[in-house]
Length: 194
Image 1: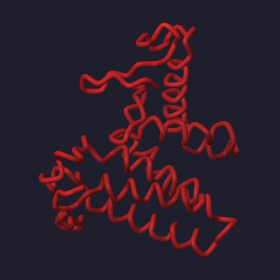
Image 2 (image 1 turned 180 degrees about the vertical axis):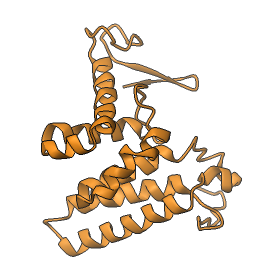
Image 3 (image 1 turned 120 degrees about the horizontal axis):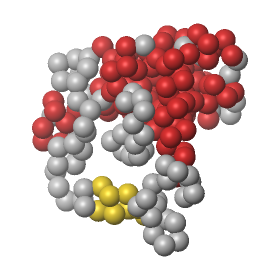
Image 4 (image 1 turned 30 degrees about the horizontal axis):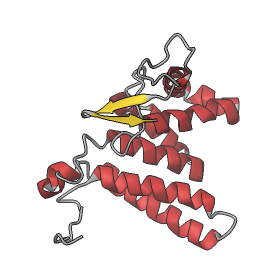
């Protein structure tokens, strides 16, 4: 790569909630991977994931809106999905109910787009969040599902709609398929084989 690669940062006066929350999600999920193999590293990842999530939530704003010169390479459409994605992974990594409250209360209402199944992509983490949180109603104690009932139920229903759309014989099956049932996704005039 021969282009100049200037240093760019997000901070309180130039927020990038999408970038910070995405990094928090990656660190929280990685902390689970390393929990048994290297508990010190796992703890470090989790500590920084919590800090990044707190920063992203407190200093809300889109990276590409606040730093316009990155729009050619990274033009995010928003940060709400990354906040929900990070909070979901932080809940799984910590068991701290405040993260579950985050995704099921007002922030869930504002950003989850319940009932509108989407595709998982670099710019949209909603499907991942929906599936991750739907797991709670399957694998966690009933008191968790009951305490956060309507929010978790909404994530589960949307995750189910996504999964049913992937099944070729489902009444809600995605119609954009090849003759051999490979899904096609149109993304800005480029078809992707999924």
